[in-house]
Image 1: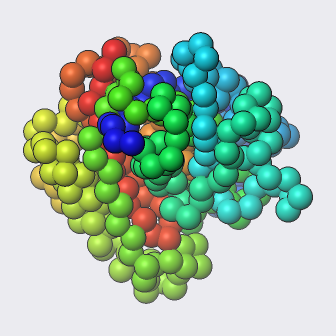
Image 2 (image 1 turned 60 degrees about the vertical axis):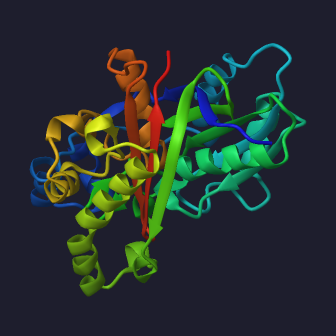
Length: 315
């Protein structure tokens, strides 16, 4: 089966509890000076965090909202749980299958996608489209679900980079639907930096030197594969790792900073795999997504994978 992947509905959910990064200093082992660096240099200020909340109460609300866009009688063939941390539940609990069952989709094939860390959400969009083309019945859908708890200091703090927060999102995908058209998807993985948080100091420094150029090149490659030039992109909808890395990327690209949506970084911090979908819904609520215009969804995952997906928004 052939067809264009379309995003029929994107929804997000954030816990009500909002805290200042200062409130996490003790649990994360950060000194006041280090908190000052995160605020003044990295651009972080507040984040959503509910230390006593459960995983499924976080991820299910956005998924239920996205499914409201499902036409009567339509079939969800796949439930894809895209997350960053490889282990989120005890070994006897398959989170993807629990999500599928809680949503009342027993006939859907449910599985998780984690290999690209925070880029897994964009990878799931690409994979969903390929599966729908290759083996699903005509008119079938895939539901992508993201979201995870910052369940320990080790998975909440990325030293000298970001503090992770909590949110969830869901994206309903089909072929040749009425939603946003997916024009291209590009990823680049630099295996040399696969150690992630365990990288040596030298590798961390080297990764910082190449980060901006590789990310900029990934964005431009995705734009070119979409048959566009960067001036055709209305906004870059990014991950929220920090502002300083985005400023370096923007400088490397020679681009206009106003075309990168960074407003949520001080409000939500980095949301694992959910950033681009949360930022998308924020822009939609603000009336800043214009039908017929093109947008680049962009993320980077520890490991190190760079990803960009270009879409055309449709009402």
